[in-house]
Image 1 (cartoon, rainbow, N blue to C red):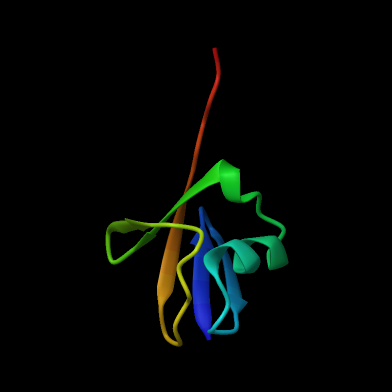
Image 2: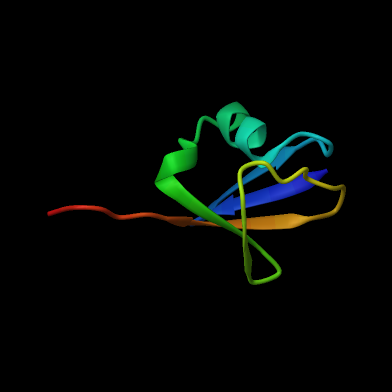
Length: 63
């Protein structure tokens, strides 16, 4: 499984899907977060692999 962490929430998704699809499955808007794997930013097109931990940082915009 792939673990996705947003603040104190943890989600588990199956490997082999794109980050975009995994976020949709978790009901997270892809444009509302920045995803990192091992401290490096990854794109929504990344294929998630078994055992990975993806950390999400909420994007705050305003004006």
